[in-house]
Amino acid sequence: MSSAPISNAAHQPGWFATERKDPWYVSPLAIGALLLAFVVYSTAVGLIGGYHWLNGTGYLSPFYSPEIYGWGPHAIWQGAPGFWPEWLAKVLPFSSAFLILAVPAGFRLTCYYYRKAYYRSIWLDPVGCAVGEGRKTYWGENQLPLILWNAHRYFLYLAIIVGFILLYDGIKAFWFPVDAAGKQFLWTVGGKAVEGAAYVRTTLDPTHEAGWKFGIGLGSIILIINPLLIMGYTFGCHSLRHLVGGRKDRFGPTPCGQYKAWRFVTWLNEHHDKWAMGSLVWVGFTDLYVRLCAAGVWHDVMIYSPFAK
Ligand code: FES
View 1 (cartoon, rainbow, N blue to C red):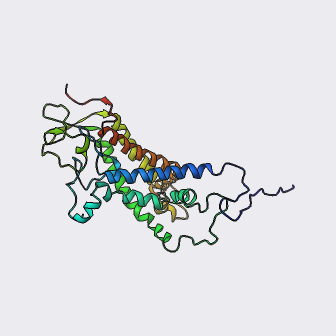
View 2 (view 1 turned 90 degrees about the vertical axis):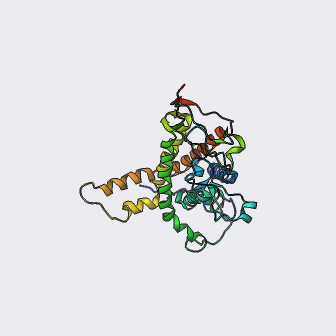
């Protein structure tokens, strides 16, 4: 049997130098554009400090959840926290998103899949297989700053907690506030239903809903899909797979709970890239939906209304 030489595009020195003929640049370009768009969008909506919940519903933007300090019916403590100094508030007014965005940002920044994505698309280091790069030495990830990426497992623990909080938000999105007559309850500021600029850093009137009723809006469905995608991404994490069973050489003769858990994480892990990008796009869209409904640009569609006529 004759052995054919293995075709292999030689690694060329210098930025983008390659003998590859396929459109290898499409994937890093598209992923880079998506990642940059997400970073710009999430930074902008985090700074806005409002329009993150929708009056008359249980909808809360995932970018602002859990809302530890803030303004609105979902905040645990109303207003800005005492540790946000006045001098800072003058240049950077407090936003509830500041206390939470570091967890998903840190989790995704240190994720093994995203590292590959932005090393290629943003840092161009390397931009693709058999494509030249500018740097001549390889430092690896065993010294500063990239050694910090080893914190991924700790971000995982926090991300699991946030995932369950977002699941709670998704379930809560099926419950709508009602007044004593069973009609839709609207939170107010100065006696007027909250809308427009009143969504931003404004203290609500001390009136409360009489109860909550089950209903289904388009937002309910969007908000419940969000944690399912995020959990599909989180529970397919490489660190979790190692934690659940990766340290074992083999499992026992009968399938045990640990083996089943490892199989489940492995099953999710096989498509970790798709869960990563799908959940990224959907979490952004979920925020956009709540935000545009709050701004009055879009109107939430009630599929099953719980309100008395
Ligand atoms: Fe991607 Fe852990 S490796 S979330």
